[in-house]
Image (spheres, rainbow, N blue to C red):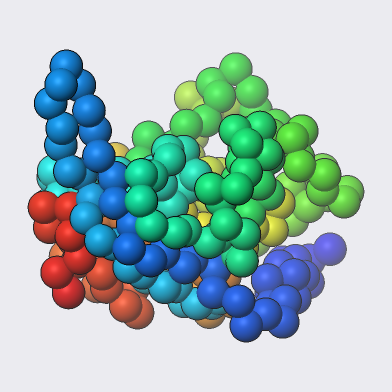
Amino acid sequence: MDKKSATTQIKTNSLKASTTPVIEISGLDKWYRNDGLEFHALENITIQVSKGEFVAIVGPSGSGKSTLMNIIGCLDRYDKGTYKLSGQDVSKLSDIELAHYRGKVIGFVFQSFNLLERYTVLDNVLLPSFYVPVEKPRERALELLKMLDIADKANNLPSQISGGQKQRVAIARSLMTDPDLLLADEPTGNLDSKTGKVVLEIFNKLHEMGKTVLLITHDVAIAGYAHRQINILDGAIVK
């Protein structure tokens, strides 16, 4: 399959008819408790992200954005309020059910890439298919690498490619299960400004193809690539 066909296939998979918001959070609170002390990390958070949006959550260090990202990514639990991910109330799921649902519905892209150094680029992209069924996984992984212009590195180890190429691999991996949400945590944090812009343009193109993208960043300029911004400060939405 050529690059154009691969792109068309990804786009077709992504534009599933749905009126259900991908993210629907209402009145969410999160506390941290330690040695009798209580810290209100998130207070009365209400957010809705529709299918196909490109949204940035932006705030300085300590604002609560990482805590909110962990909750949105189903990596942490909350204390009050409701959170529905693609229509599923995640509070109703056991830890095992939540882990499976997270793997199916969310594609993660991290600042540090989180590639397994002993595995080839292709094997890293294939990893999600070991936990979530994917039709013709090897073919799909190669299509994604081709779409992201890094198919020629399929048999390389992560140590043999550049930082920008590593992030392309991470993005390909995040798309492997055709998730409802791409959750990118400071995806340009370990890249130079030129390479960072290239990665942000990739997210913009994925948005144009119908993917829902949520970008977490402290940088207002980077947040400007998104089509909508949610500002968080001291654990509360301020704009």
